[in-house]
Amino acid sequence: MRELSKMVKNIAIIGNGCAAVECIKALRECGCNDTIHLFSDHSYPVYNPMLTTYYVAGKIDFSKLFPFGTNDELARTFNVRFHTRSPVMTLDTTEKVIVTADGLAVSYDRCLIASGASPVRPPIEGIHSGRVYTMRTVEDAIGLKTALEQKPTRVLVVGASMVGIKLVELFRAAGIDVCLADLATHLFPAAAHPDCAAVLAERLRENGVDLRFGTSLTRLEESGAGLLAYFAGDTMPERVDLAVICIGVRANTAFVDRNCIDTAAGVLVNERMETNVHGVYAAGDVAQGRNLLTGQPQIVGLWSNARYQGRTAGRNMAGEHDVFPGNIPHNITHFMNMDFIGIGDVKNYDKMRKYWDGNHFIQLFWQEGLITGANLVDSYTSSGVIRQALIKGLQQSCVHNQGTMPLVQDLLIRKIIMEVEQA
Image 1: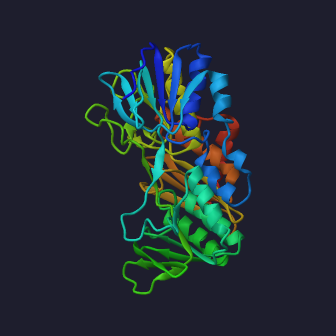
Image 2: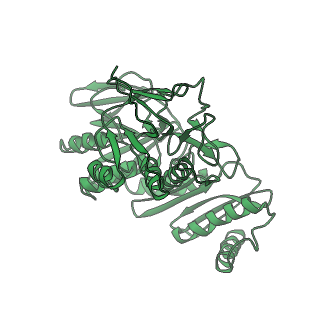
Image 3: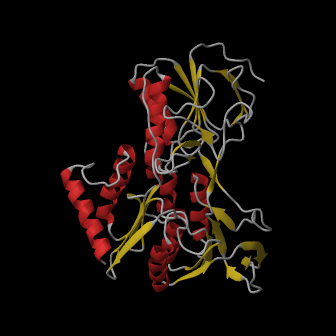
């Protein structure tokens, strides 16, 4: 092990994503002059995982994956010491020491865990075949883009998620046949009600997408120049050239001592982004903040959420007092000339109404008099006001949303509700 750094007032940032950069920016804006060490397990600059499919599709150049510029630019602008290709192996919160895979040991006074998340691969036979891909990292994007140069004719996308649907879109745009499969019974199982998912599924079929829902992938087998994908309850496999797995992500917490730091699906934090350990904070896709709908801790994997959490952590680490009360699940995606929006909770409700005119679809969900969720198809302009209705209603604990919002928003939400209830 290398000699332990003797410098005082060190700030350690574990991870090189949006939350990490926003934390660093907030620290410097608050006048913090302490030494900042940033540890990353790769050498790429900060990238947006949701842009990887746009790069593979050729919609953006490679440089556009990195919205904050290069590591050198960030290092100069914010006076940060980058440790790239230095995955953290140990976070010792008793001695306040970080140890990396290559033996570097750095002491810290305050630490931010912003290590993000990694794609999940199901533990099935053949999952590590060279013809099986995931889609989240820069390496993933480069690998899949290279694979497309081989001109596949049919692909399997496993996971009817926001990432999965963007892959379906890019494959179909390239003239490639696609089978979209998921263990769930419908598209966007975490964000869409079955009624809304049925509308989207019909449009996908019209665009030539084969759907295989309600069955699990059990085995992948290489065969000649392609793959055989076997599903539970079916003896006939899907014959494809390659497969992409998009069934979700898992928080990167392998270096976290769960006997010291409270964790569940991720690292548990309060409104100040503090963990249960003094001086240790967490933000981004590794952090479980508060879901405003349920009051329970939940990872809300949104770029905007990572920004708010990172800046909140940075301000508090700099000695200011700042809170981020929490967020609600809010997914927006555009694909195949369709807009889908899922807001809040669409599974637990005591009242539901929907509006469908053959083009626009609006479905609202209530619980105890409050709007708690919504599904929208091709009704993009309604998204913001409905989201605000959810948040305002929850924050003020009112029985109805009337009077809790600015007049224009209040009138718009009433108009939307009227349309839905009269449908």
